[in-house]
Image 1: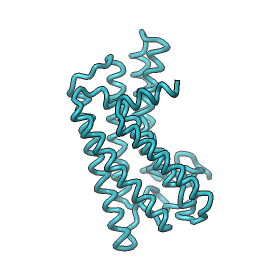
Image 2: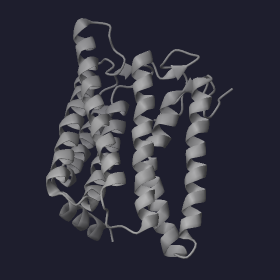
Image 3: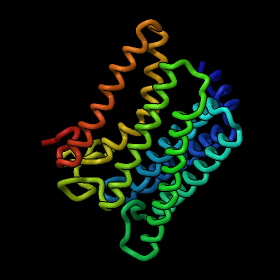
Image 4: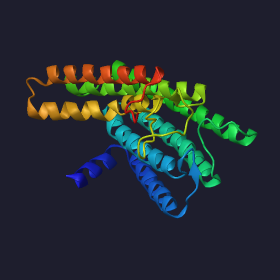
Length: 261
């Protein structure tokens, strides 16, 4: 089944398919560096963040490789795919460069060079956000050959992904992801979300991955009960969006998603 999935993924969009595998390779590199490099940044190993971003970008690339196939114009599909690849290559490349330098990538304005790196990342993430917004518009305006329930699942997932990017922009504007404490304090293993104060990353993460969770859940509902799938998807989507709002409320009020107190 997994082989069939990757075969289909490659058929849908070769460039994003191979870009995803390129990020798997960078993940392996980061994992290797994690084993041999004990550099600590903000309280955790310097290579945890590159690993997380390599995984995230792989999922992002393969998700868009799958969903872009539904758009009727191949020129538009190629434009979006190339834009994602360029933006994410710059983002991940700079994150890895800063890890090699033993310093932070995001919110780092301590030197002119670091500020330039962070600004460059911000520019390309902004471009990527516009690409996502363009994709959202296309999914709402173009004729998409999908049954209504699944089409709306992709639409809501894309919209959540775009809105999740806004909370990322808020973190950049604040030069911090924690609310009520300094970044780099006590946090969850690997994720490092603060367990003593608010952390916008938790809300950001859940909103972004609605792009995968809502369509996958919809497919499950369609398989279990096609007759009731529409109702089940609606209820699940409302709950999921409610959780996203709740997590944002927690974060901006300085309350941790999971508390260690």
